Image 1 (cartoon, rainbow over the protein chains, first blue to last red):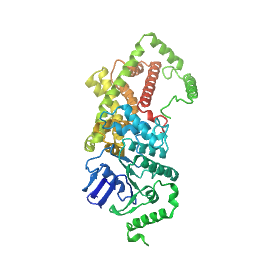
Image 2 (image 1 turned 135 degrees about the vertical axis):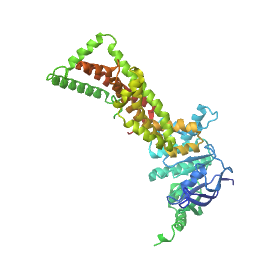
Image 3 (image 1 turned 180 degrees about the horizontal axis):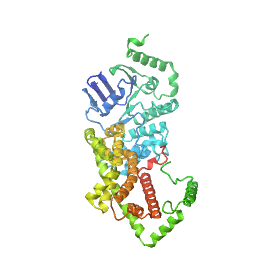
Image 4 (image 1 turned 90 degrees about the vertical axis):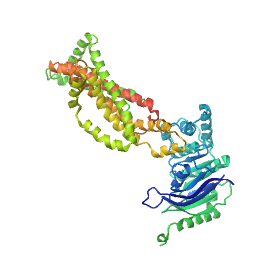
Length: 259
Length: 261
């Protein structure tokens, strides 16, 4: 299968005096895959996502998305940020249409709105088009952010701990939405999380990261069949995978955590 | 709360409360005035009579009112027009900010009352000096709030828009302008109020027209009822400006309606 994201020997330090944020990162994501980047807070997994999105430039190494080094653009690669990051002065519909408006070259207003409405329907949001973000619950805001990521029909979605701020039930609902939308649109996903269960439930492959400096410890393939439902979380296979991820994570903790 | 004198809900109750408050004030004022001669504290009826006298001289009061209104509003616009681009520059270039801000603070520290006579000497007894004085006092709060507001633009939103492929112009109009508005409006509100004070102070320092001039003139001849008439009109102007800004806020920031503040 085609590689859509290639990260080669990437190193990044925010300042030259301290330890690099990321050191010698190698990562590949193939078309149609859903990969989770899992690691403790501060291991640089969100930074890696920002590098891939083109918001940061690595000190060394290279990043290619669809084989190219330049910023891919929202129509090819989009992002679901932490805390939804909606513009508070725009209604839900206006927020979703924003990526189409920016740098627009000739798509008509009607066509853009039609796409935005289709994206809202895809994430199961109805009747909130004209509401402002502050009028929505956290879960609904995150759905809007998801719709905004889907509106340009991007083939690759980067998800930066999109469900970290939600309660467990809301998170379950959105996990199922992600699985459903994946089966409908076949997007490629790279999601950052520090929740092991979330990672095992959603991913085809889990890349485990360690901290100081941020580095990749290893990866675990998740061979759970689709469609997945919430009940698979109580199966022994699932528990086994969680255990395997846990073992890998603990390698990154070093000796002083053993006692 | 502070933005809604007459909210949609409970509008009737609020009107009634305002009316009763006004009535009580007038009664207390009348009672107090009965202890003093008119040149110390005129009663509401005496003020009303003086007002009628002025009305009889057609257009005179309106002329004074409009002169002050013009000075304050034109000064506010001028001050804002000067402050906005400068606030953008200062917010964008911290080194320029370091250079200019001490100067701004120093000028701001000079009481406008002390500065006004100088501006009258330089720019004459006409409207120009008053507009400039009003502009000067309105300038600072708009500048300060503009800088603060622009600095508060969420860098994560900016990064997101860059990833979306936004051009610089789009980031300015679609992100920076809307994010600066709430803070900026605080500055505009203060600036507009101060511009009235600026215009009046300017008229004190030498003028032949305006509500401030009326107060100045009336003081000279102990026409205390006239002072009250002028003060009431100044207060009315202040309320008018306040409502104007509130209206602008509603039009320009519809998303703020009903948001917790």
